[in-house]
Amino acid sequence: MSSRTEPLVAQFVQTHDDLVSLIRQISAEDWQKVPAGEQRSVGAIAYHTAKGYLATLSFAQMLANGQPLPQFTPDMLDQMNAREAAEHADVSKEQVLDMLEAKSRSVAEGLSALTDAQLDASGEFFGHRLTGEGVVAGLVVSHVREHVESIRSVIQG
Image (tube, helix red, strand yellow):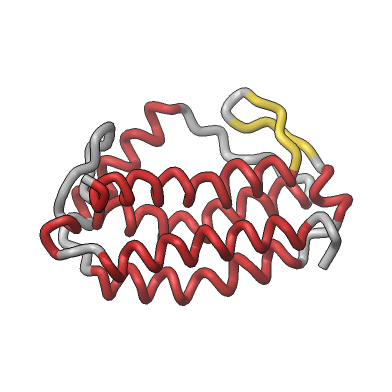
């Protein structure tokens, strides 16, 4: 593992652990609540976050390997998220925890395998020029953090 990759993996692992801890302590009632600024329940957000683990890792790996990233528009993402929320509105905490457990190791291992050169590789995503390191920090880690904070807002009421 490179010295630059190590802190990124640690950030992901810490954020993952925060998410798992929140999910374990959230009540069944709060699992169904919709946080302020969201259009889906805590359960749907948690599912989305777990499902996104491997997708965001694949974006980082694609960029690292010189492949073009998928070109999504905000409207496309909103539609995908709305469809996903409707399809998984009844997801259980146990299902999400199982997904998180199964995928977190793969993400940590995938991030650990990135070289400094791969972290420096760059490409376009949402009209912005990003490096592999930027994708890891901005998508793999920050995506989870954003959803952790949204879920935490329900618990803190």
